[in-house]
Structure formats: structure tokens, C-alpha cells
Length: 335
Ligand code: NAD
Image (tube, rainbow, N blue to C red; front, side):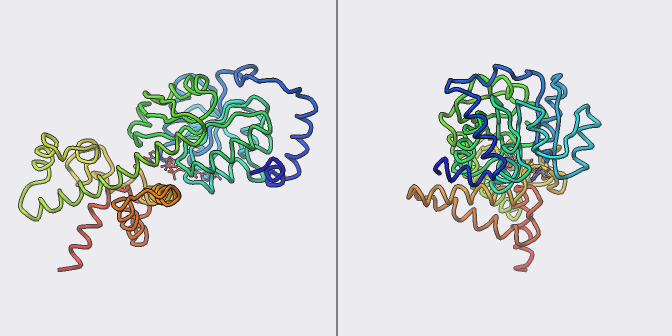
């Protein structure tokens, strides 16, 4: 996108701010750490993942200001010691370090580029870390718009799920220019902080990982369900698989069959965790990327259709491991 088009998209308020910045800031390289208060951080998006991440920042003695459309989520974080803001714009007015954890590309575009969005008030030298899983092209678009205002946007999607988010053990896949600065912040919420390259490459790594996860979860659900039909108890079958070549994260850590592992969504009626609609969204991103790069991904394509079917059958908000329950429901309908 050209600078001019970007300015039109940003709206008149930002065009004026951009002009003022250009006047007052001579061309020089800036440091995002130069005038940022190191212990103040804004956090937007307090869902299944973001609430845990923001809470970990509070626990690490950061002064956290939060915003979410869901008032209950905000209240819960305020009860844990955070302050609240009434919009993304207010977060950006008050903080030069901001983390966002939102569902998908349209939400992220809205929170950054929308009317009361971050870029409507962002301060120069702000470091913007977006941990949502979104289209790499949207990450690159926002980076350009942020740079026009003297801020640095980086894509920092995560893997690890809600348990790792709660325990501060996330893996962050980082794309963008200020890796060392980003790492200092992300270490407060995660264990592995990986430099993937320029903006968008964090998302690329994340999309490939989730594509594989989608396929392996369906495989795990199919195998354990078949085992049940053949008279093998799921816990025993899981134990054998985890000693054998079928072992994977979906059998060992996040088993889709209720009762095999306690404390994960499958043993809690598939509540919490990683929603089926989010997995369908990630597979959509993978399919777009695969089509664009002419890469064959037949298993992922099939998985995408299956998760979309689940979304249309009442499973959208359940954890994606509910594919096990979905298969059993299909089986019951056949009888
Ligand atoms: P979620 O749907 O539980 O939470 C998203 C939060 O964003 C909600 O609280 C929602 O109210 C808020 N929100 C949406 N639009 C907003 C706006 N305009 N302004 C302010 N708040 C807004 O999602 P999640 O499970 O926390 O996932 C967040 C991101 O992390 C997604 O991109 C997902 O793909 C990715 N992710 C999730 C998991 C997981 O296990 N849940 C794991 C890895 C990555």
C-alpha cells in the first residue's frame, strides 16, 4: 500500500498527526526504548489467552492497563490489580508498550486502524506487539501504518494454548525490527521467544504449526474413537500410542477423549481452550497462503472443511479437540 493510500485509510485525524510528526521529527533513527516507561504496559484482548497473559504481567509487577469489549473480562483483570481504559485509543494515549491478543484479522485491523484505534493516538517510539494469529499481509499493512507515525509494530503470535498462557510458558514467534526489545517483554509471558525474521514471518510460522496441529488432532480423535469401537479402553490406547510412533501433542498433552487427561478442555465438556472457530480461521489463513504460493496441502484442506462443518453444527465455541465428540455424534446419527 502506498503512503498516500495508507494516510487516507488512517482518517483525517491521523493525517494531521502524521504531518505534525514529520515537521517536528527530523529524519533520524529512533529507539523504541528511548522514552518508554519500562514497567507500564497496555493490553487489549482479554479472552481465553489474553486474560492469562495480562495477569502474568501484573504478577511480574508491571503496571498493566487493559481494554476489552467484554466488561466482565476487564473487571476480572482489574480485580487482579490492573487498571482499565475505555478504548484502544486511550490505551495508546497512556502507554508506549502495548500487547494485543485478538481473535482474527478484522478485529486486529479495527483495534489498530479503526476510529478509536491504537494508531489514532499512538505515541512516537511506541512498541506494538500483536500476539493474535492473523493474515501475515495484515501484519505487514499495520507495520507500515505504524511506522508512518514513528511506532514499531511486530507480529508475535503464540503457541502453547491456555495452559501455557496461564503458566507463562508460551512460545512466541516473532517477526519485526526490534527483537531484543520485544523479547524483554515477551519473556514475562513465555518461555521460548524465537526470532523468525521480518514482520509477517511470525505469522507464517504460526499458521504452518496450526495447520499440522489441525490434522494431527483429527487423526488422534479418529484413532481413539476407532479403538473404542474395537474394544480398547481410551486411556490404555493412549498409553500405547504415547510409547509408539503415533505419539503427538494431541495424544500426549491435549488428548481429545474425555477423561484421559484431567485439567484440559476435553475433560471439561470442551470449555475454554482453543475454539473450533479459531482453528477454522487459522486453516483459512493456511489455505489462502497455500493457494497464493501454489503449495499442495490436501490434508489441511480436508481439515478446514471438517472444522467449518463443526462450526455450522454448534461446535464453534467449543475447544477444537471436540472433533472427537463430533465424530461420535456423526457415528450415532448413522445408527
Ligand atoms: P478469545 O476469542 O477467547 O478472546 C479474544 C478477546 O478479544 C475477547 O475477550 C474479545 O472480547 C476481545 N476483542 C475482540 N474484538 C475486540 C475489540 N475490537 N476491542 C477490544 N477487545 C476485543 O480468543 P483467544 O482464544 O484468547 O485467542 C486470541 C488469539 O490467539 C487468536 O488469534 C487465536 O487464534 C490465538 N491463539 C489462541 C490459542 C488458544 O489456545 N486459545 C492458542 C494460540 C493462539
